[in-house]
Image (cartoon, rainbow, N blue to C red):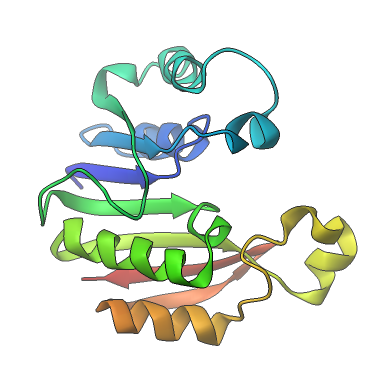
Length: 172
């Protein structure tokens, strides 16, 4: 994997894990860094500075670029990325916003590129354990996501669940 886009990078957990696992990869950490950042990650320094500090502590900052942008309208050329990862970000959007973000992911991913999409699994056990705290995206079931991903042009290579997570491994 060469150039990777991390959609909804937040404080950098997924960015760091990816860069540690792929020592030759470079990464663009994209997040809106909007008003909801402090709500999700707590008070502290400016969001981009917190992300940069985390990347530096992990020793991977030299292979990462931070971009503040909306995931529905990315400032990148078509086919700019070899891979994309999004962990618990796209499901924050409305149904229409999610579809826009998926279309943009398809646009910026190179043909044959892979996209790992992780979403909160809105199943009964997650709701019981966490209540409305983790109800990103309302109650969109797996079938809605699968249909929306295929509508955006992706091939679903693999899908499944892990604790509190619904995931799709996709190919353009």
